[in-house]
Length: 124
Image 1 (cartoon, one colour):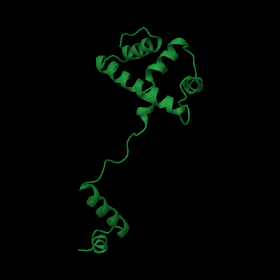
Image 2 (image 1 turned 120 degrees about the horizontal axis):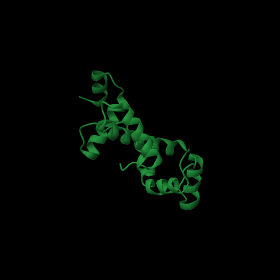
Image 3 (image 1 turned 180 degrees about the horizontal axis):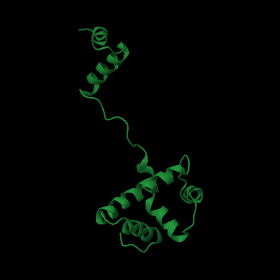
Image 4 (image 1 turned 120 degrees about the vertical axis):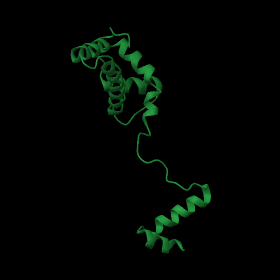
């Protein structure tokens, strides 16, 4: 069957079938690659130790100040401070999961655990 006939048969564009067959011929891969997901967080995670040290040095530092400090001291720039916010939010979510699994039936202890982590009093 020709590529154009296959496109008609499966209800897709002929250009897609042509690309797929070309990809299969060059790589030998007969399945689609993983789509979506996070492709950039590894950039900010590489600077996690630096960011946490900056926060320990100045507890009330803003995201904008953190982004500027990273740019000035290491020449690393991110699109917006929201990249930093997403990084810290993902760290907090993983911490919340650990704390909540330890205190499933005690929501007050969960809140206290988060407060202790925020103030540096927790050992997690």
